[in-house]
Length: 263
Length: 251
Image 1 (tube, chains in turn green, purple):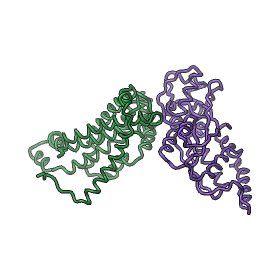
Image 2 (cartoon, one colour; image 1 turned 180 degrees about the horizontal axis):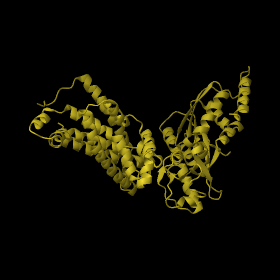
Image 3 (spheres, rainbow over the protein chains, first blue to last red; image 1 turned 180 degrees about the vertical axis):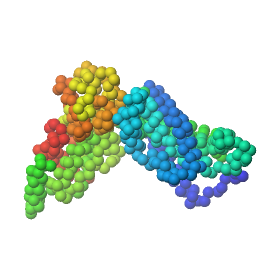
């Protein structure tokens, strides 16, 4: 059904080019200022590698948590009808508009050592989230999961329910239906949501530095390392940002081609 | 409020005097943009307000950020008239680029240990910060207060393992006041600004580090006369009085 490609109306082409330039120019700015001579040594410095490793581990972990908790929420929003659903949806997508630093403070109030729930975690289980790797995952999940929820909910709403009806008439119970029909059918949006969520988690700064603090090897993820480097060695910060951009670009481009069936 | 009454009266008197037929030699107008280090925020808001009261035709715009951030902004052409830094190296960076005129030290600050109200962990010295099980957070070594803290630890012969290296001094105070951390090292002025949930534990002179705050006119200043007048005001007895109320020491 796909056509080879439409001819773009000229006004649209001009605006689209402007739109693209708006994103590409700052990247070019970074590339133009990058200290290529020292780039390799900056890259392979142990601090940069530690931060990159931590960033990748934490962003993947928070994407995992977001999948486990976010899919059920999306399902409930798309399929269940109950009073206050719209309010609940708004509440769980609030982190998208909340300044991340405020999110971090709110997390401290809830899960910090003196927080509403955090004090019990500390007293009963000796679990403390601030200043730990787990704290980074919590902060990143808080900020990034809404992207997954919204994407998956849209996928669930857009899916052809007749397949589910057919499976039900063939005797599939609710659990089988979910596992064998619904999940495979929303796999693309599940994947797209996970990628968006991962990308947001990878770039997370405000909530992380507020809730988890900043310590190399433990809570200093790549964006935090970039921020700290920016104050002392701006060239180093540029190289670190480029690494992050390169990693994200490779992942986003390759995943899109592979999973979302791009043209 | 009680204490500021004579000050207000003095200002009112000055204002009346200025309203006369002869304008004073230093009459200035327009707006003056002051870029100041984050640790100066409370004191400079007060200074700016007083300056506006003294010079009714001047508007003071204040912009606060970490000193390195302000330096980066000025280098990228951010408009401004006056720069007040939390340390000498950041001022030097702008001097090297010929972006500021002569700098003058207008205040000094000292380090203090910040702990929760009532000092629940019984911290008495820098050495206590090395105690295992204590959650200590410090400024990152990339910002002035972090550099000074490391100098103080060296003087005291202490090695502290922090839980976090915060990127600005206010974050250290707020995490101690929230109870997330047991102690931190910050400026005396920040403990004072931190309110009733925190208190300070003094650091003896032999281990302490004195921070010097320089101020200078930006060479790109669009309103040099007002900028100069603001700097003179900060250095004047009245300006110094305000700074001391916030815990700063005179230069």
